[in-house]
Length: 239
Image (tube, rainbow, N blue to C red; front, top):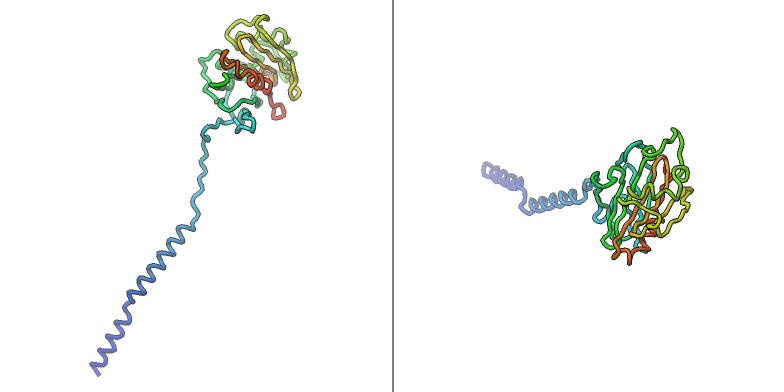
């Protein structure tokens, strides 16, 4: 009886030891389950968003004709001189190759330059936002037009030196015209030195785009620069 009991006890102990095959099989199943859990777990969302290479905030991708539209970004900083008021967004068209460049307060008129762009192929431009209170007494609550502020024939005599750093006489103007864009009147000028200017007044600011190109660039890019000048407009609907 004692021998039989020991035999039964040995059989029971052997049956209590896990089979090596089962152990490996169970381990493989556990690893597969773990791997499945890791692969199916959602990755954390990456909410960081930076500037896309080759893009400038406010500058849209090129269309089929290579035109890129710049719209002043909402929230862009800038006080711009005496008589600060909220800045209404504006827009203009440039072409592939134009890039925004830093504005320095050391630049002539730097405190009133809102944005600068440059193109190695076409030339350069700046947008100037000049408070009318710097040179005119405007009543509170009024929104004068450019015609009310300064006559067309006198505009370049008054603003030309600030834009070009040189006096601008009538014989330097090779073309000039007045047009209307979204209800606002714009003064437009082309100078002998390949400077282009378009200007309007809105919300007590003189909004001016000024483009310039050396002779070499002007020969190939004059039409594109004129198109940019004519595309400049203040987005009054967003005021």
